[in-house]
Length: 107
Length: 195
Image (tube, rainbow over all chains, first blue to last red; front, side, top):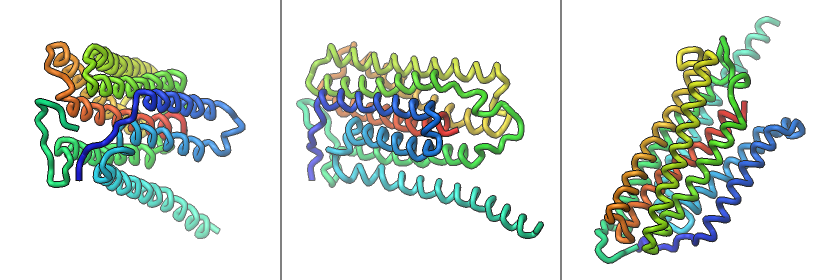
């Protein structure tokens, strides 16, 4: 296995930068437009994930580099996100259940 | 990538061991920042006294800081491309520009923190203040380390000690800098935009 890889060209770097700026403008725009408030969280998370992916794939060269680097980065990331989701579920899920139980008890 | 005069350190996988170690470090940093973001989210909306996020967060100001950090990432990859092709004149310019944009970001954070303290939000005021300052402060500390690292590289370039043979050093610096950028991408969305 060799580490030889082709980094993106300057042209690609500039296109990615333009995409990042457009995505940031969209994020801030969505935040200020009342019509989007119902779907604000999912839209912002998708836009943020798109920016994250662009930087990691092109600026950090994971798209062209060894898949082992992707594993070294991806495995802890998946673990971390899993722990975060579990924590949020535990805290907010427990609150909801306690609330429901309390309401049932009161009733 | 092999250059004349470069000291290469390959693992049995054929990968540069410095780069592999650095990706492992970045993986551990993912765990650190996710724990801080999780803590922020878990305590979100549970402050019993103000100031609250809606009253204090300045979205236009932070949007400019975000733009600044994104542009610094562009400068960083342009620096790497210049060093790899041996164009050290532009390599030095882009490296310095990256550090400068990092300093601008840090300046923005100092202004933001000072404004918050004047409005009554400190790390001990409420749960929001505590989790906010720890999360963004840890990120700011990472940016500060990155700026020092970039300036060190820039000085080495001025001394003529940085060239295509050391392109891997610039690439690893870039990995750190871009990681700091992606962490901010998440913080900007989770802390500032999703209130």
